[in-house]
Length: 251
Image (tube, rainbow, N blue to C red; front, side, top):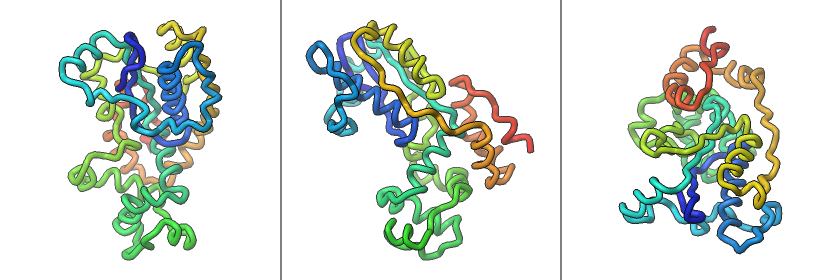
């Protein structure tokens, strides 16, 4: 979280550069322009600004306990969420579906070794890409469901449960938006903040992950694993108003 103006704050979290990441990027741009002089720059003019650089914003953890309490009490606090099953598809496509040396070295290589029947995977993402080797979506789900994964370290933020990432039971958020209704929710939030005449929230990519597409992705995942995955993300679904995906869980 980081301060914007005396009456504004924002819960920051990393996500994938899919539609969810677009929402995060756009809100970071909103915060960035609010630190500039009025009239605020057009968000579409920030194409060359490295908006994800950590030193662009202040984080809640950088303040004293007293300052944190003041911000939690007086600032407007909001977050945007996404259906957990769709979010996992997005994370997989972005981090394991294309060349990414960081995620390959930290995660994909071990996933291939542990669940993909590849005892000695290539050392680099380039080599893996050249040989057409990458973890399957089911391999990724196996990794998430393996009890050793969470015992070793917390989930990476791209697939960590939202209630563990943004702590809605500890932080009294004033507004919770949804990726599925991003444009409408963003407009409503800007009106609440009395910024709708000053800031135009950029149009976002259309959410291309349809219910049929979700079913196609999870068709490769055994029913028992889908049910275990539901238990893993059940609190997110219930906290943020998402329905139980019966079509995935009832066989």
